[in-house]
Length: 187
Image (cartoon, rainbow, N blue to C red; front, side, top):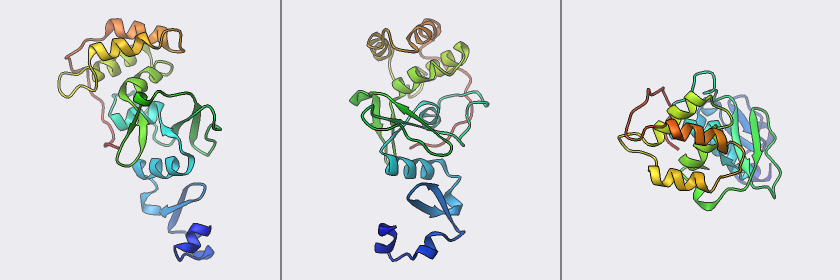
């Protein structure tokens, strides 16, 4: 509230119906409430979290099954020293991320394409994980290389999702274009 007062907004104005409350301490024009980037930007600014899992997959444009591309639920990862984000329609995760596993975008920071794909190993079916992996190694504008993927996976041995990721890796085809599903914009 102090920041709102400093900006010249009254308490009554901050409670106006034309403003949405995407997360605690943030008010935005209601017309932008449904815009994913605006919502993610507000949430990450307040929580310090990194956009991850399915939410990062949407930002990167990964082909996802329609049943999982639910933008109503946002995934944010926090460092283990911080409390996991708890807010309506937000799934908070706690885990250590290596510096190369976080990409700072213009509006938000999210997990790297490799880390995002690896995190999806716990959510996607094997076929969908292979499709997402083929997207990483696609013919045009690949998000990574086979060597980088293999090196990344070597460093994840023993981690949750590793076995499924390795099964998917064995089925992935670099330089191909698996069927693409509609995606969101960039971050």
